[in-house]
Image (cartoon, rainbow, N blue to C red; front, side):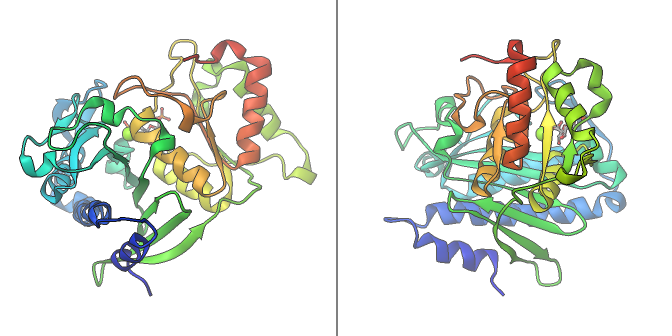
Length: 339
Ligand code: AHM
Ligand code: MG
């Protein structure tokens, strides 16, 4: 049995000149995740459900647990001292800590503290998604927005926590994906899925099909393909859609499948946020042998322009993502987003 802390410390040796700072951020995220996990589990009892009354940057009503989770992760990153700035889905502006201690930090973090939060009150799995980058700005000063606007190719580490029937922490530092299951009896994350690989063939597709009429023709064609009678290639496939990105991706990562959130004519950028959702999940997908695209471009090669930018998102088993790209190119070239 290997715990998350043991694993992180062991892997520190993989990084030449590692100072341990990076390991400490990962540890801090793991600790905050335990606290959030406790509250998520007690949510029904603790009567902390319901709307907080405020709206987040995207104009969506925030639930109390979103606010709680955001505060916990910010607190952990602030107290750790390795992180000089945080971009959070719940904060309009970049959060800096205005202390010499934090300004010396060499890393910045992008976080979606509680994704899929509309699912909280119906007891459906939700998650935290995080990305760690090395800062570009000079140390000793507060982190800058530019530190966060890095391509996914520059990621130092990314991962998610899924608060589900079991709570798990899944992360990668660019050397494969490892998953840890939380054992609440001892309060430890235990390595349960070393070196996760997404199956090269999948038969699950996940999409909010109610929006079918708004989808690009390329996506409609792909859905027709998924639903065709073709037993040799296991079609028709099967649909699974929880409406919680972390949970939908996690299932597809283990079983093989594709998650899609297309852009539409009205909303060409779709719904999901590049920084907090698409980039980290794309990094994990690629590290597990899968693929992630905006329908035309590799997500990890996209240069983010602002903190809360959105992007269409297709992620999962390589073969399936390539198929959608093929249909998009032929049927919906007008949906291509150019730099
Ligand atoms: P959120 O960040 O407001 O929670 O929204 C993101 C979530 C994803 O987890 C999920 O996949 C998607 O929104 C579901 O959207 P929809 O309800 O449009 O299908
Ligand atoms: Mg989200």
